[in-house]
Image (cartoon, rainbow, N blue to C red; front, side):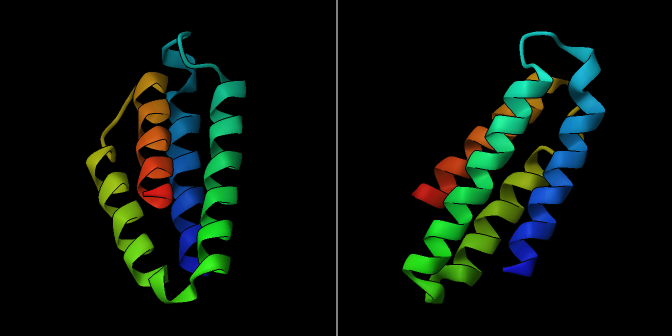
Length: 88
């Protein structure tokens, strides 16, 4: 569970650094997506703790994909991709 939260924090940092560069994805949207991701991760782990490692790998893959992102739109897309991966 701690790994998931660390990954989510990393993405939040990415989102924070990208916020001022693109108005199409607002800070409020990023905050909501971050909350949605955290809720999805918690629900998935609660439902089936044995899938925690698989979910961690999926989230880390998306995080790596968007690591160099510089726009808020990229950050929003990264959140969307991670939420989709978690909800699978």
